[in-house]
Length: 339
Image (cartoon, rainbow, N blue to C red):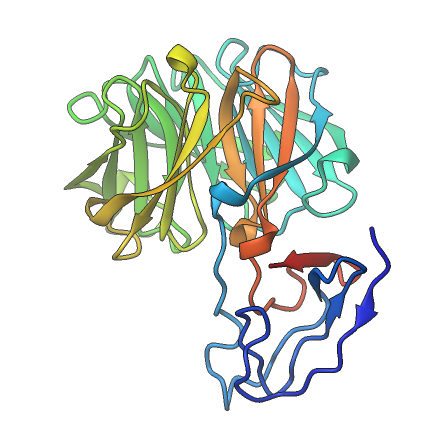
């Protein structure tokens, strides 16, 4: 990375490159090309004066994606159809519908695909619950896992007795029957508070929302009659929602539509309020076979898995992604570019 020079900045309301500064201001730096960087270890904790200081963050603009590198997951059984990256940026999971296996990987540096290594932890899902598991979503604390079971037409719930350790995953006995709502479940997302779960249908390009009366418990699921049609996609292959359910991403590989499209929910969590933002990104410079996609917290990084080459690609979205960081969100020695 280029040499960085610390900028002397004080508190107050003067924005720097669109980033509002707070009383306990983060330390910003400039490089030789006058790009602005934020050191992740610096954050504002003055929540009395600025109650939103720890949560005022924007991000995830796919229009700004720039390719970084890729990592290999070629030691897994079966072609990967989806990936999931943990909220804290330390773990990555691959899902294979052909082998019904979930493999666990870890980052040596948070969200840095070049440091990814295999933990030798794997679990095989039973055909009784999930004969063709296409996608997975985990609760923020990694104690719950949800699987989109394509052939069974189900969203299936699992417990991890040791959070994050995929070898401890067991079927909870609960699932959502999507046979009347989602004919081809190929994507799943559990909301950050466990009160909603979303399923993506690759046969109709619809994302449908279920409400959970008891958080994280799919036995209490009620279809909300809320849905959204991702009409830009030729055939949905992957989907992702960000951490506060304000942004939705859908990817497609059919007929040259090797792209990810970005949608915004005007009411966070309410899928019926989604609309196309006009923002899109083509994978074709790296791959024409991206299946599952994932974004890191704040949308700093985007990842996509190629089902044929077993590569997980990494793109940088950080130029519009960082506002004020919470302590521990990134390694303190990590710098994030701001434009």
